[in-house]
Amino acid sequence: MQKKSWKFKRSKDKHIAGICGGIAEGMGWNPFLVRIGYIGFTIVTAILPGILFYLLLWLVMPANNEDSEA
Image (cartoon, rainbow, N blue to C red; front, side):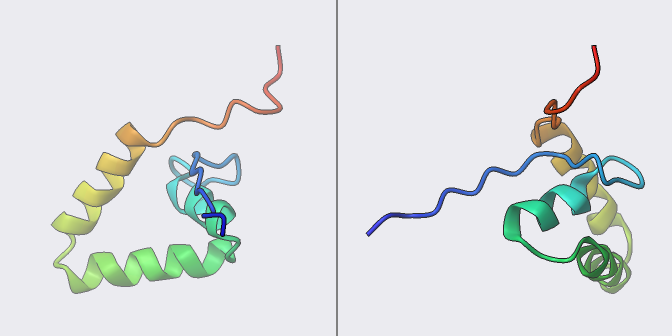
């Protein structure tokens, strides 16, 4: 039985850094719903943890360099 490996990369479908879009692409989910979920998470956690989580992912997730124009 093979394990499915998740390769998350920041998405080119982005509003700020492509974090939510990258998670949505990696999981096969709708980016809009991931963004709404992130906003809900940020509001419920009193904003600061949500922002810190986003900044951490921005630093950790590699950029999507596919289809880059040279």
